[in-house]
Image (cartoon, rainbow, N blue to C red; front, side, top):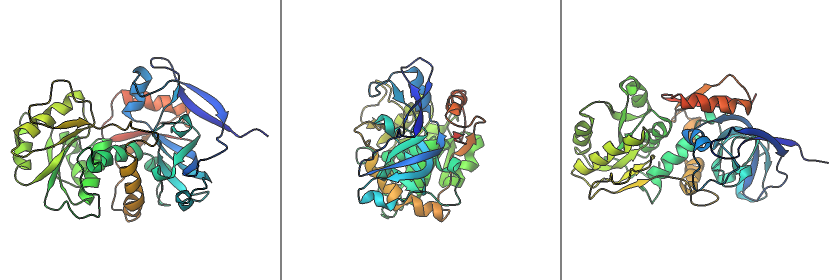
Length: 345
């Protein structure tokens, strides 16, 4: 008897139309894996980027997508995987190091450390906004190769500030909440119309990144107390430059973790800055930080209502994998403080 049919959203090469193709549902799992039936997916800028630009660490043809939420259908034999049961409602981060591990398909294989049960009251369309945004923010904030901050619950952030540049976007909105939960006083930037949103996520001071005096204003604020560093979480490519200038002007030695590429020749003398990217191995370099957040912090924080769904999901009209391209095209037009989501049915 043949396996049930799976469908996936394939990108055969950069610059060509995507295609939806069928294959068997994976019939065997590694000890540390779980199989879920997708109920919602979220799209990210990298998905749109990979349709037109071939990155050196991507092998085409590739299944796109990293953000998924759904229902567990099978569980691997390893002891760590046994925290899941068939029927559990979960979200998952799928870094896509293996084709069956990418998100934009009807059945997705996830590493158990990159999957997490969600509250019964949380809709799948809400749950799927978290994975990549939270993984990137967590890697930048807590990863030893980046800012290396203490995790929530370790109680070492009190009295220090952290700058999150781009606080209304997906990565930034999660960085604010994670840093706040870790005990840091967050200074953030965003557009003026998103001030209240960003304050509601936990930022104590918010500055308009379009203001002519924003660099001077932010430096003055950071130098009032000990600053733990800078995370450039969002914004156009030139969003890195003001963060570098803030670090250079500050009286403190501020490391800059950048979600965007650091432009060649842009780093002032004496400033330390690094591009944050998840590329190291099959599990991804964010595995250590993401799995810890999924295991030790986020489930309880969501259950207690202490962590907000951010950014707000905007669901496209077309259901199923056929809606993925619609979502990517909408993302390409530009969105603010929203995450574009596709529901499976």
